[in-house]
Image (cartoon, rainbow, N blue to C red; front, side, top):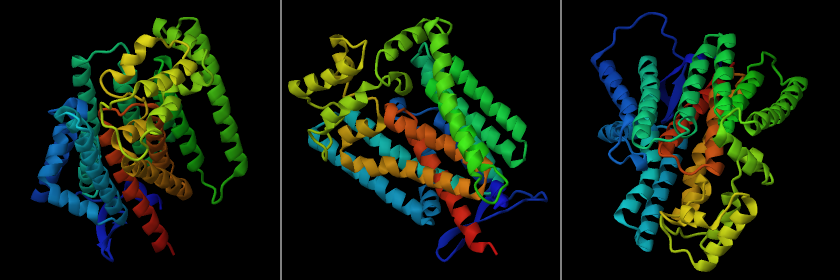
Length: 438
C-alpha cells in the first residue's frame, strides 16, 4: 500500500483502468509522445491563469482540454465512478440550460450559469488525462496547475483590487500549495518539515484574519497525523486525544482571535467584524452567515425549478428574506437589500445559491465531487497513508466549507473537477491494492 504514495496510473483490466505502483529506479529516455504530453500538461495548467470571461471561471486551460477532448474523455471513461460523475454533470448542464431558457435570463447571465457545470466537467476530463500519465507528466501538471491558479488570482486582483487579498485571493491557493508540498515531503518521510510547513501556512491565515482557512488547514494536519499511525489497529486513546485536541484548538483559536481582534491588533476591519459577529448567536464560529437561514425563504417557493441568475422575487418573499437577515445580523440595515437582489440573487452559499438558480437538478453535480473526496479520505485513513490523508482532508474541508458558507468562487469548477479526479484515481489505487494483497 505504501508504494502507492509515488504511483503512476499505467494499465487496465476487465474493461476498466487499473492502477499499479511504478517506481522509476533508472532514468528512461523520454519519447516524442512523452514530450508532447509534457507540453500539453503545462499548457493546461498554466492556461488557467487567464480566461476570455474571467467571472465565469472558464480559462484557456479548459480550451486546451477541449482540443484533446477525445483523449481526455477516453481517460475518464475507463473509470466507472468517473462515468457516473460525467453523466451527472451533463444532466446538471442540460437542466441549467432548460432553466435559463425558461426564465428568460440574458445571454450574459446564461453564459455565467452554464459555465459552472461546464468548468467542472472539462476540469474533470483534463485532470483524468493528466494524472494518468507518466510520473514526470503528473509532476509538471501539478506544478503548472498551481502556478496557473496563482497567476489567475494575481491578474484578477490587479483589475479588481481588494483590501483583503489573502482571504479573497491568495489564501486558498497558497494553502493548497503548502499542502501539496507537505504531501511530497511526507512521501519522502520528512514529517518534521511537512508539519512545520502546514503549521506555518495555518498561522499566516490566522494572523491575517482568515479564520476558516486556518481551521481547514489545522483540521487536515491533525487528521493526517492520526492517520499516519504505524499500529495495525486504531488506537482509541490516541483518537480521543486528537478529538480533545481539536476541541481545545477551536476554543483556543476563538479566544485568542477574539482578544487580538477586539483589541485592534489585527486591524480596524477585523475589529469591526468581530464586534458584529459577537452579537449574533453562533456568528463567531460560522462567520455570521444569516443568509443560510434566509435561503430557505427563497428555495421553498420553487424547490424543484430554478429561478435563474436574476430572478423576479415578490415583495412578500423579499420582506421575509430580509426579516431573517435582520434577526441574524446585528449590523443589518435596509440599504443592504440591493446587495442581495441588485445584480442577481446572492445567498452566500454554493449549495443554496445553485439550488435557487438552477433548481434541484444541480445538487447531485455539486455534492458528488465532494462525496468522492470524502470516500478517498476514508480510504487514506484506512490505509494509514498520512500524505494522502492530508491532501484529501484539506480538499474535503475546503470544498465542504465553500459548499455551505461561500458563494460560488470563480475557480470553483477547477477545484471541484480536479479534486474529484484525484479522489477517483486514488480510491481506485487503494481498492486494487486490497484485491491484490496476499
